[in-house]
Length: 206
Image (tube, rainbow, N blue to C red; front, side, top):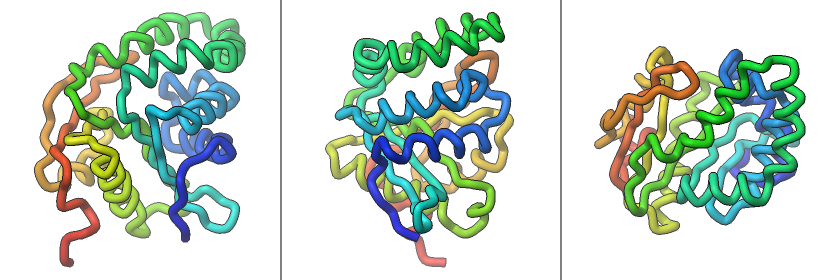
C-alpha cells in the first residue's frame, strides 16, 4: 500500500469511493460524472490537497483537504462551473428537488464560521474491502500533518450526526471537540475542530 498525492487522474476512482460510502446523500445523487468532475477540480486547485492510498492501480482510500474553503468554493464556481454544470443539470432534470440542494450548497462555507489558518477535511473514505485494516488513522494523521506543514494552525471536519462509527473514531483524536451543529441538505451535521499540530490517531503507543 502506497500513499501518494491526490491528482486529477484519481478523480474517477475517488468518485466511486464517495458513492460507495455515501449512498443517498445529496452529492451522490448528483451522479458519478458530477463527482468525477468535482474531484478533478479539487485535485487541480492550489487551495486544496489530498492523499490517496494506492494498491497497485486501485485507489483504496482517499483524503481531501481544503486549505481555505471559501477561496476553494469561489474558484470552483468561477473556473469549473461548466464542467460541473452539465452533469448536475442532467440530474436536476431527472430529480427537480435537487435544485434546492445546489442552492444551499453554494452557501456552505458561510455556515462554518471559518477561522483564520483553518484547514477542512472535505472528504475521507475507503473502499469497503479495505476497511478495518488500520488505514483510516494513518490517512487522518497524514492529512493533518500536511495541513500543519502548509501553515494551518487548526483543522475542522463535518460529520453526519447519525454516523456513530466515524464520530467515535474521530473523537479519539487528542484535543478535538464539537464546535457547531449545522443543517446541510436536510442532515444534521456536527462540526469538529482541532488545533494543529496534534498527537494524531495512529501515532500513540498501543
